[in-house]
Length: 403
Image 1 (cartoon, rainbow, N blue to C red):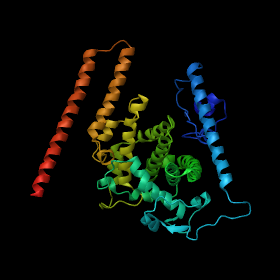
Image 2 (image 1 turned 180 degrees about the vertical axis):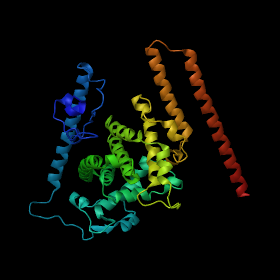
Image 3 (image 1 turned 90 degrees about the horizontal axis):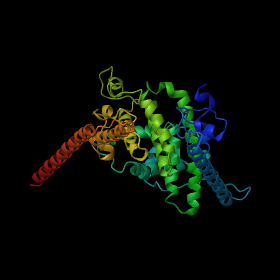
Image 4 (image 1 turned 90 degrees about the vertical axis):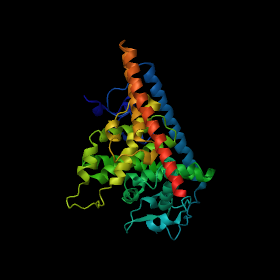
């Protein structure tokens, strides 16, 4: 009997019935606890001390989630209007997206209900005022937090693909509203903080439900439709950011590993060559082929896979060298870090694992370890020398331009 027919490993250790939803089950997502999935048996599932520790950690996380929800509910009851009194709604509760994005007032928090955010519009490109303000807050405040070194003047600086995906009101839309509400809760006063945390929790639950539905319906189409693939990657990125912002220790890895499984089925050639070759010879991309979005998102996911080596001690899961040698993937435009530096980070992680395995097997060769380390050191030295030379040439050109 397969593991998926029994349930995820989290439900199994809790002795709970699992609905075996992928990529994570409803039992875990509703309780905001890490779903360990349906893969190979985890190392902590040893029937001894490690399993007890994990069970205790899961129980603590669930109890904290329950207390947080109850606290928000009680706070909402105390601040709700008296029975029979309807809360006044602003007359201009619907605004055109172009108008909302031009206001610049991203910190405005409206008292409209959450239902109004999810209410479908009778006109394309329309958000209600609360949603528009949350979206603006994401673009103005949260996006710079996610990508502080993002180069808006670079080829990846055009973010029209992001607005296009948000206007579809899919899982990405609700995930962004959740992250934006969560970010606002950290900068507002006590009363507004509780209100925004409650909104963030509801938006996050809605995003997870929509994401599970999206994956069940569109999973087989991800590799054949760039718009669906971009929405999947973008939503996963926002969900990762939500977990990181809340200080989650492991939950963000679940979303990253789901992305890695999908990217394993892709290659730079299938993404950047065949898919963007116009049969008509035109260089204009169709609206459902967000090339810049895929370049942006794939560069981000490859970088996250490499950065995950630091807190987890694991090696990169993706073929990072293959992706980072592709001209379309320019990490420097996002993180101000050259591709060759990211390759060295991955190589160092792989070298560390190789050393650990060799030591465990009693076969470690010091000379081989030194040779591999020296090779990485030479590449690092050459890269730094090129950076210094490039800086000096730029400084010289600047001086000549002044004269």
